Length: 183
Ligand SMILES: Cc1cc2nc3c(=O)[nH]c(=O)nc-3n(C[C@H](O)[C@H](O)[C@H](O)COP(=O)(O)O)c2cc1C
Image 1 (cartoon, rainbow, N blue to C red):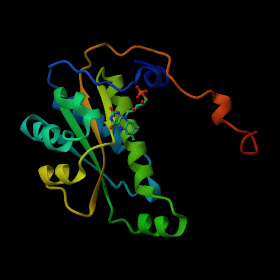
Image 2: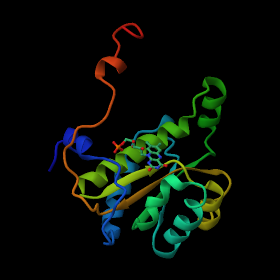
Image 3: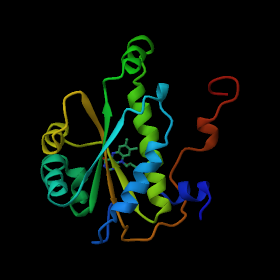
């Protein structure tokens, strides 16, 4: 059992995977961590579609290929988790209208990070993919119009074991202010 901070430090974007299937039981455990995430008004707008086998191949071919050269690495991923937000929540619509905050994106972001950290704890690698062909993915998975596809997350056993490592991040003093912005 790892400490939370160790899991956070171990997680990194994994873009090379072993040719080894991920057990459905583990996928369920990972989604369970997302299920327990907090959300605005407890709306739980997240929905997850697991793309594997032929369906995953179609996403790799039509949803990531073409001019999106950056994600060519994904052609060998065992599983793609498609994170969606149900846009039918009145609280989200009101919130976006009055506050200008897209609450569904916050909710999905938290849930996916839960999922990703749980995957790390189980020895699995993940990588967020925010650059994909939404139209193609929607068509392949038959996702209705009122459901927004917010991110794809690759999942599989990493080629290289996940280790504690230094991350390239801004210094704390650049992002943490006390009582006044910038101070
Ligand atoms: C919302 C979001 C979208 C991302 N989209 C992509 C992507 O399309 N392709 C990719 O290779 N990595 C993508 N990443 C991974 C980031 O590049 C990566 O998290 C960042 O460089 C920090 O590296 P680390 O995850 O290894 O700590 C995305 C990450 C996030 C959070």
